[in-house]
Length: 142
Image (cartoon, rainbow, N blue to C red; front, side, top):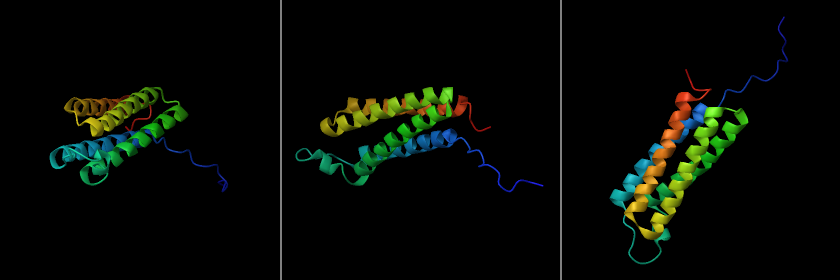
């Protein structure tokens, strides 16, 4: 006879899913950045932030902010699950995304190609971090 009042099912570890979502959103962010570069031009005068609030640039800003929130959540999940590889991967990913976000902010202010390049390099760091977490993480999908 089975016990009808069984305890809750163990929750599946969400780190691989969130690592994949981070990589997917980083890809969307990259494509939005390319679209912004190709199809958007900041005005020479006036509010650059007002210009960046819509279209390609606005979507790029929103995706970057969502990435920042997701990166913080992945760090929380990594520390809650005590997954060593994911702790490191999530912190490095967060550092990359924070740096990219700050370089993006600076880019809107200055429209400097070097800052744009540094934004992309920081995004690459986050890609590598989440990829490493998926590859070597204790809870990686088999």
